[in-house]
Image (tube, rainbow, N blue to C red; front, side, top):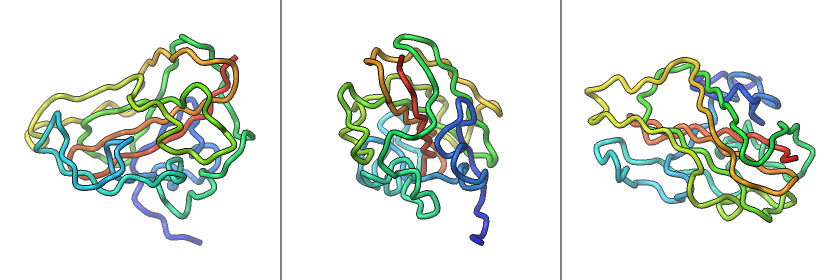
Length: 191
């Protein structure tokens, strides 16, 4: 049995891949360096330069697991993931639950591109380069402000246009007072 690590936060609704296929403590611990889709560590936040620089973001092919060995099954290739049914342009509510306090800078939401290949590992090239939705807490410097979203926190996203089929939504919660972000993948079935 693996030791439990500190719990942090995860998407609970619609259920993320982590919520569906991992134990709760594991689903809440999918953290790696912030600023996706960037791949290098040691970068300052251009919006909040006093925030802690980023740690190493997850490697391509390890985005769903945030590079955590205990969650490697989330990176498996295939289309048999449990999917949440959606339509182009609909509003989708994403709910995060938090199990450890972190000063929050932003939440970014990315979607796989038109024509992405579900038979290949999730890479930066499979996602749009810019988030289709972002929620940013503007107060600076982080040590003088609470920067704590409600628990739970729900964001309403208008989904981009996509053809019918499997798409992957990547939800990233970026922390101001560490170099980390929390990665959650939600499988969608566009109808």
